[in-house]
Image (tube, rainbow, N blue to C red):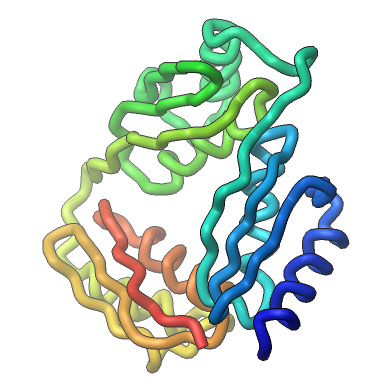
Length: 215
């Protein structure tokens, strides 16, 4: 596929994604690497644009350079954003009470703390990324599992075999303590993401290095 064809595919995907206003987004494609430039009105749109491009066949990598520029009436003071972030996190039953701390500087939210599971770490970021005034998120929450899983590799391989989205025999799993490395080759970004999610879902995993090649 030529760079021009890939660029057109990406632009078309952004146009038909209802959660993204593509009017001010620029797209450059080179050797399967797509660079997104321009600006959007919220951090949620920035994430949605990246997720949309990941689903386009032929995309091998993404350089995300979109800026978040909010209208004056949408801007919030840092203390207001922090208060709203803490409130929405407290309402999420998947996030343990008192485990996540929030700091905000010029709209950029930094999350700290310790949780037992990766999904709790991701839930905290997902809870705040749609808040008005947020320009970005640094998720520094640590996953410190309460359980000790000596058979992490086996559990991940079993999870890969159960997934209809993954050709498990093309994914190699290596485990170093609680850190997992995925290598090999998959057919699409969707399959790559499914393999990574399968690894994170296993108890005891605190880090996943995704070295899977797409194509």
